[in-house]
Length: 411
Image (cartoon, rainbow, N blue to C red; front, side, top):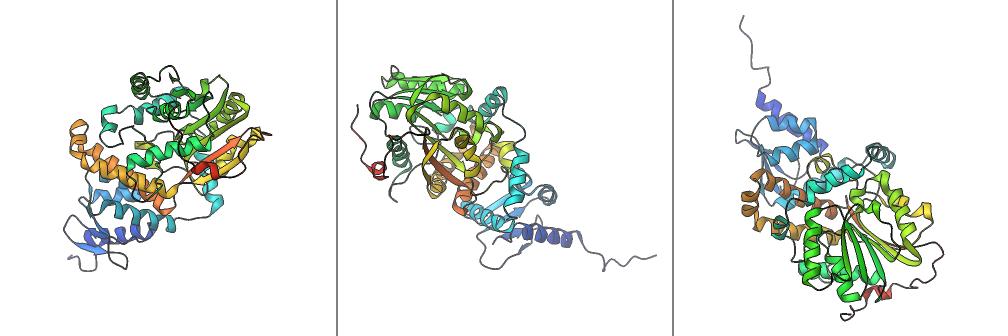
């Protein structure tokens, strides 16, 4: 019997239908899609910002299984290629997807709580830090600023360079904390030590800084000796949960995202027992406008164990100890630009990075940096600086004017 094949859909037509369905669920971003056959088509109105090429049929089914993990892994492995402005594409996709996937507050809050069940133990925290921050100082030196600051910069004017904006960020934090010569500071999660050294050098304080990354702490100790600040700055290779000193000031920049929601109360306990009654504290963290779990591709390939909190979730640090929240500032757009600057620097050295690691590594980090910038640009991600004080501390500023004064001379 002869079968009539005209009524049967071809594989290509099924592929197009599946991709249209995928793009619909992604919010129909303004992109052109290209199949491995060379055929191109669009699923949205308006001029496309870039073209997504599917080099193998397998990539379609990877996206169906998991849109985030599937897209990320297929791009990293070369099954998907991007033609056009990569950052513009990331902005378009993240904006469209965020708009499409907004299911309301309670659904996201439930998923966020469910994702936080697994706590970051001391051993797991050290492993998570090693996964990302111990890739090698030489790698980060290629594309960060000369001080190796790996947190949101503060662009006081549009013409500021990345390096200038990072110094401005440190001063902005120091002014908020009203640092004075002779004070003692505890820093939880110190990166390569730039903020601790800056506080000691320009504000005359003594700092004890904690970090789980061996490579970062080794570099920070070397910088302290080189600057002649090792008598005022001590870098401790250990977890923040081992802090057992008292201080005038407690600061944490870019660590809360790695703590894990179940450990927020523990961090608050540590701050409460460390901070003097008339002290000040600041937490600088990536955040969200409402609770939701972290992106699965990010937690799998970039930041294992991470959780990006909403302000309500961050309150778990403050409320049990009746801390007075004095100031909350959102630097979201500053971080969008910071990540874009990092991406530009990274692209300039991508060949060197490929030689150090692999092309797959380069593509993974390109996607991470572009996606992060897009997350902040779209409002999917926030950047909170929260200034707070012990309950009943009346030795606090009455206005915000002091936050914008000039930096003092070296102490």
